[in-house]
Image (tube, rainbow, N blue to C red; front, side, top):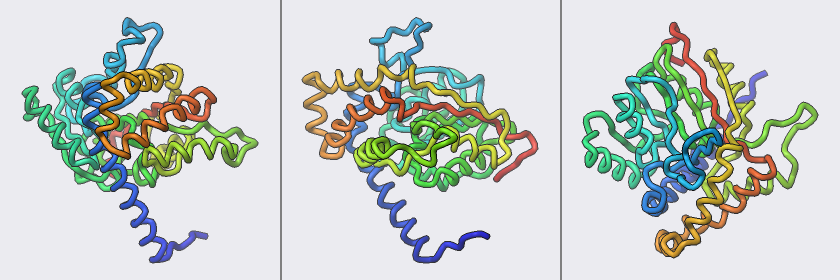
Length: 297
C-alpha cells in the first residue's frame, strides 16, 4: 500500500530543501574565490593514477581526466566555476551549459569562459539540479562531478539527469558515497553515522547514500550499461594535499578572509581523511546510457 504524504510534510520538505540550498549557495559563494586562487579551475578531487605520468604533487593536473569520447552537447550539473565545461569545450568542441546554486560561481564561470574565447560554446546559470530548466532529451553527455552529495532527494536528482539526457546519451555521476552495506547490515555503525554527520554539518550535505543505492535508482529508470567503480584509492592523496595548501601562509590567510562557512569547512578536512582511511567514505563513479528509444522520464 502506498503511503500518502500530507501537505504539511510536503511543506516541511520544501522548507528543508530551500534551507539546504541556501546554505550550499552561500558556502560556495564564500569559498570559490579561495579555491580558484589556490587550486585553479576545477573544484573537485584529483585522480592520482599510479600508472599515469601525472606526478602525485601535481594536483591541478590530477584534476583533469577525459570523461568520454566526443560529446556534442553537455550539461555540467553542479558546475562550480566551470572548469570541467571549459575543458570539455576545448577538448571535444562540445557545446556546454553549466548549472550551480551559487550566483558567484555562475558569474565567475561566465567571465572565465569569455576571457578564454569560449562564450559561444559555454554558458553558466543559476539553477536547481532537481528542477533543471531544460527540455527532455537535450544533452549527449550529462555530467555531474561531485554535486550528487549535495542533493537531498537522490531519486529526483537521478531522474532529472535521465530526463535531460538525449536518447543514447551518456550519464556520468562522480560523487561521495558511504560504503555499501553488507547483507547482514541494516545501517551503518553508530560511529560511522556520527562521522558523516559532522561532515554533513560542515559541507552542507544531506544524508549520504551508497553506490549500490545509486545503481538501484538507475535500474528502476530502465537505463542501460550501468557500471560503477570505487575511485577512493586514486583520490586518497587529495585531502592531505588540500590541508598542506591550507597550512601555507597564502592558504591560511585566504581561509581567514573568506568567512566563517569556509573556516568551518576547513576544520572538516581531517574528517574526510579519516572517512577515506577507515573505508566509510567512497569516491564513486557511476556511468550509464539512456536507451535509444527512450525520449524522457
